Length: 521
Image 1: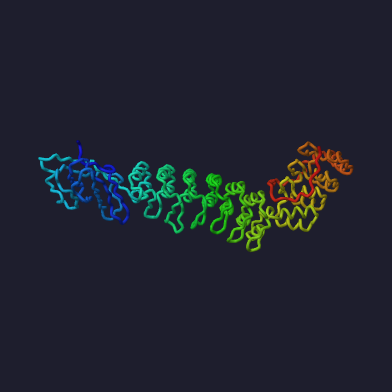
Image 2: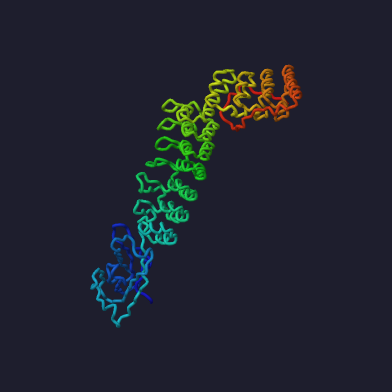
């Protein structure tokens, strides 16, 4: 027999360290003798830092006694000198005492000390008792240090009733928050193995965040995935102002936003002040996030509760031309008014964003005015800065529209303002092709005289002359032939007389294409 007493649950005593509380741990001594009582004496080698209660006693056969080991922290310290493991040791003496009365006490003289020193008896000495420091202070420090193995050991040795994995540090952050703050998915994974409260809030700020909110805000996609796999709440919960989807959109974290949407996040969920994720993406100029939200079915005409503004109002106020184009392309209603009865166009005007006028309404107005021959309106809009070479969803410029409708005066004004005379629509039609299709000889003559390429072909290979011939427009044919003769007489190609502005043909605005060009096969 090598011992009289067994140690339960193991030879490691977890001493819990908590702010402002006594630091102590418990260990159980079991008499393994079937018929004889056993006397014990447990003494720390470091008597300054540790105290033991009871230090001596007698244990009946096959029964137990629980020992409390207390550790005294150094003054002005909240951690032991070494943690979680330490080299401090204890000596456990035990001896069989036939016929002795059972007793346990905290007094050193409860069992005569000479029982453990006399040579007449066989005294067993066990020095295997070890100390491990656990508790919130220790765990917070270990997580901060990234000590994965030690974290697992401490959590395994901690009493389940302590809920050690939900410990918080001195600033109110849970262990998960600390791991998220370091951007350590491996630490998060270890903590998740011990089933923490994944929705616990940090009390560091007035409106503390959940671990998921913190991970999303930091752009930690792998940690977000781990938390979602462990049933972290995907919705905004009071008292949070923003939910995970808003944090992802505002931070420009497209991959996280996509993951949240795949996991079922409400694309139109609102913040505490009534903004959707799309409002926030627009506000923060996160175009990729805005595009993803729109593709995922976000409603682009929702008005927020603070000012009654749609995302388009916000983009207009910021002067974000690309965002305005994106929203309009997806179908945003330009006529919705905010709480101040202002449309997005009104907001753009208020902030002096003149480059947005076309997309937000003036281009439409100019198109209609050009089609109707409203010279006064056309001049006024052009003077206000409306672009002449922007195209609609079909590639038609305002010059295409005016030429097709035979508005010669408007055509002349547009050409003088630098309209691209050879601009092509999605079918390869130039304004000359449009004028020929509808037989407007005066417009054709004006366009040709200003250098239009009479040999330009549509995507199907048709020239202006071939279109005129197919439609049997004799007057138009004559004008085109005269232009060809004039070009030969002067010995120059009419193409060298083109007046082009070189301005880009980005799709801008949505023109009213009430009359489509004829198709020549």
